[in-house]
Image (cartoon, rainbow, N blue to C red):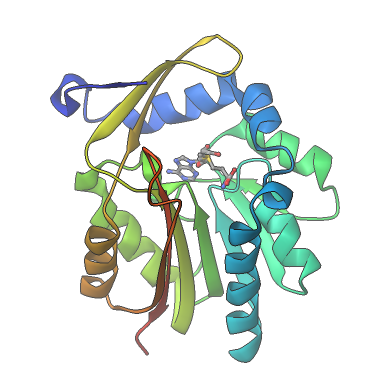
Length: 222
Ligand SMILES: C[S@@+](CC[C@H](N)C(=O)[O-])C[C@H]1O[C@@H](n2cnc3c(N)ncnc32)[C@H](O)[C@@H]1O
C-alpha cells in the first residue's frame, strides 16, 4: 500500500472501484480473514459486549453492514442475535451465503440501505467504513442513524491513523483499485456525536502497531 493524493481519484468512481476490487479479490480476502475471531479475542469480546447491549435493549434485528464473508454475522447469530449481512460485493455475499446458508445476506451499500427507517436494533460496521471517503462519511452515518430505532446501537471498527492508503494489488495478486481511509478515534466519535449518537465506548487495539485498530460503540439518542 502507498499513500496517494485523494484528488487523484474521480469522486464518482470510488464505490464502483471498491465493489470491483472486492469482487476481484473475494477469494483472497476470504482466506485472509479465515479464523480471525479465534486469533483476536479482543474482537470477540467487542462483539460479545455488543450482543449483550442488544439483548439488554430487548433484542431485534442487527445488520452487519459490509459483512464480507459473514464471520461477524455468524458470531452474532450464534450469540443469539437476529443478525443478517449486507455487502457491496456480490462475490463476497455469495461466499458468505455459501459458508452460512442458514443466515441472510444481501448485496447493498451503506450509502443507501434498503432498510426501513427505525427498523434495526443494531448496526455493525466491522472495518467497512474504511472505504468511505471523508466527504461521504456524514451521509453514511446519517443513513445508519436513519435505519436504527431510537436507542439503537452502532459498532464501528476502523483502522487508526491519518490519510489514505491505496492498494493496487489484491491478496490474489490481481490488480485492484481501492482506498483505505485511516481515521483518529476522536474524529470518528465526533462525527457520530454530531449525527445524533451517544458514545458508549472507544477501544484501541495494538496502539503501538503501525496501523492500530479501533472500535467505537455508540447509541442513537432517543
Ligand atoms: C475490510 S472488508 C471487512 C469485511 C468484514 N466486515 C470483515 O471484518 O472481514 C470491507 C468490506 O466492506 C465492504 N464495503 C465497502 N464499501 C461498502 C459499502 N458502501 N456498503 C457496503 N459494504 C461495503 C466491502 O465489500 C468489504 O466486504
